[in-house]
Length: 214
Image 1 (cartoon, rainbow, N blue to C red):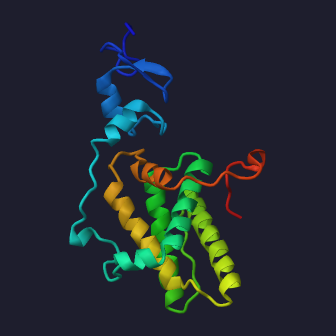
Image 2: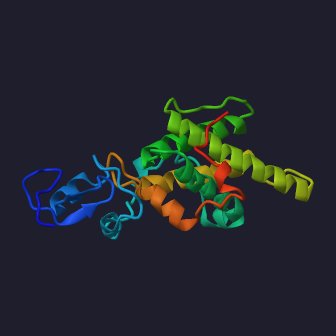
Image 3: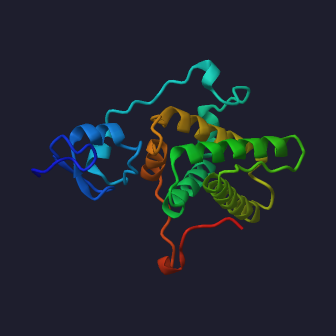
């Protein structure tokens, strides 16, 4: 690579950007990564940058819905529900084009509001105006509903309550806040989710397109 950076046009290009399909300089790569450049998960330079991202410690005033305490023993007791919810988000990464951490943040907050309302005895669903966030909201809710039905059929009673789902969604919401790197197109939370639990492979991949809410 001996030419000029395709982004700044002044510095010498030293690395290939798979998102831009062009050669860029390290300075532009670092500055524009997940800001103006929609970096793919498999970019080696993105992954090198991930190694230097730290889990952010939330201040008390930053903790959403602080009145609800989510303890480790709760997460252990409801680990299958945590896995199903995380897998739904990973599925969203695979199916919803353009999904970023901010979309996940909006979807998780709307899910929290929905399940808090259900816990009060009212039936009122809150959905984001953002269509990508709304689609993720519905996908998570669908997979959780399917899981609850399977558990109820096996056990003969409602083994998963709305309060259980609420606790799991709040855990994921706080996880997103800790992992969010603040970049405009950041996907560090989504990257962590997909590494933690990849989406299941459908029986017939040819039938799967971009998931759309009903």
